[in-house]
Length: 363
Image (cartoon, rainbow, N blue to C red; front, side, top):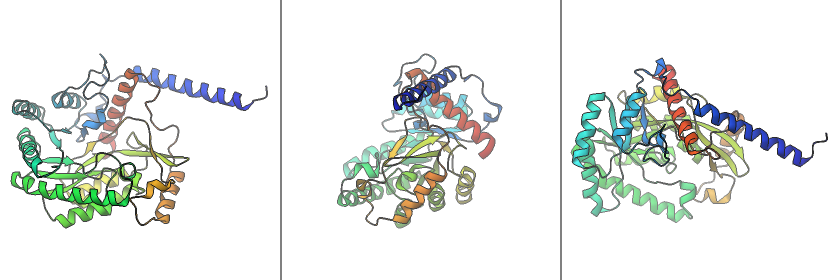
């Protein structure tokens, strides 16, 4: 039979359907009750965003009941052999703080908080209260971000970007005396906002031993920076980490970017861990494996470059060569087309697989 374009489309669609059906069946049959031997005693924690679908019970499920709070997250991660958790701490009540501290001490886990910077001087009371309660719960490091979105999506002019930088520096300057007073470290994440050199310069200019970095191993690929260049630049300032591996594939406007299971992407995880330990032997390693559809990085579109006043052709060419030469084999992880139960199963599979890899290969 002669294959027409419509025939090819039908074959392709059927193949994709069969692949997704097979994956869905495998997910629902995955033996989550069997903890791999290599996970026992692993010294890696889990970031709350690794359970973005399960935390808060966004999807109803009996097999994967939602985590209503940090206690649920802590207990589940302990059951997987994780060493600790990093989770949001804003707005905790004192009685809940006591429960978290007692559970953390009983399980022997570390706790890191995730906290919002003060928006203005009137917000300092809220910020200090969150710091105090997080410390009472046992947190010694508080991760924060300056931007909740993505630099290339949030800002429509260079002026908007410059105004954001000024606000961010001011917020950090307001926060620094408070964390210094309570002797808790504030760790600013490279959150698809600061390029590595920009964040390093910000930390150096502040000159405080109480303000450093939560080093995310993969975010800055979206800003056309190679992972290891970012890690080498920011490791000297790292108080905590978001450990992840990244997969890339080209698409018509640039490239697609996804968190993938550890050991399957473009990050040299062993070198990254060794570098962080070299500069800070007490640094924690927390898994941030976000299960979602691939992010589109439209670096071939003019609007992408608005906040980069010096367009760097060599930098673009370098990252696109990396995408070409290290393109992820097979399909990047995605959740579109999966049922709620299948999404939760994939999320859990990713977390367990990454912890298993860390226990055997990294920590």
